[in-house]
Length: 286
Image (cartoon, rainbow, N blue to C red; front, top):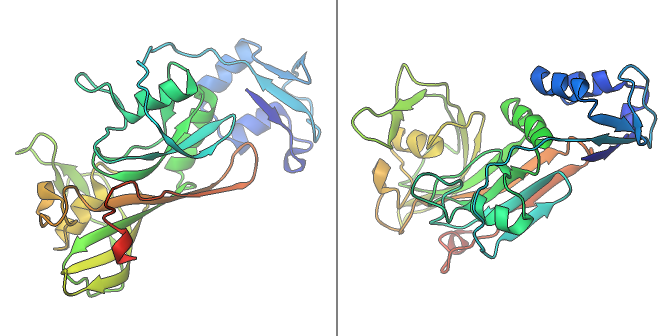
């Protein structure tokens, strides 16, 4: 993995760059140091020496070999560079494999990248569509995981909810836990994990009894938007698991945008995921 030193990092040493700028986990930093895995301009690095703009940092990574089977599928690539990949997930495809599913988005990314183990930074439910971020190696994964936890990666969703949502803007802060009466369902629970969802009503459609809303997440709990909207009495249309109307064949939820400052290129990455449904659930409401 090759990274060029930007003006913003001029004068920093490797130790500072890894621990303070990128906040790489201590265990990974230790391994990189012990393995002498970082070179500067093709020379073994002194971790205390100040770096200069234009220096070439090369990080040699020992990758795990998990042998995820490739699945040939025509992916829509929203963004790609040497460090990460953003793809547009279709409906009906799980994000990652399990004991029974192998034709997943991760399997398709394995086929596209021809690597054994791409790492999804977040995931979408099987019948939710839109942008999913993958890291291309363990170092990128460590940095992007930290950015997601620190809310430095903004995820914006479009949703069609049943009913007329009266408040134009809202914040739902109910904790979410497992529903002990159902193997996959989640529910609002006092003993659950903290969950914060923001929403903005874009438009309402009285004839269809639907509200088009934009949602953003401060946390990323399983089924978070679905649970929160159901809790306030406006489940996603098509979401049978959480009481939604049968207007659509799936829950009307689409991960529309991803935005963040690239940790290695220091540029803003902003992607918008197109609608892959045919016919589209959302297009006639925009």
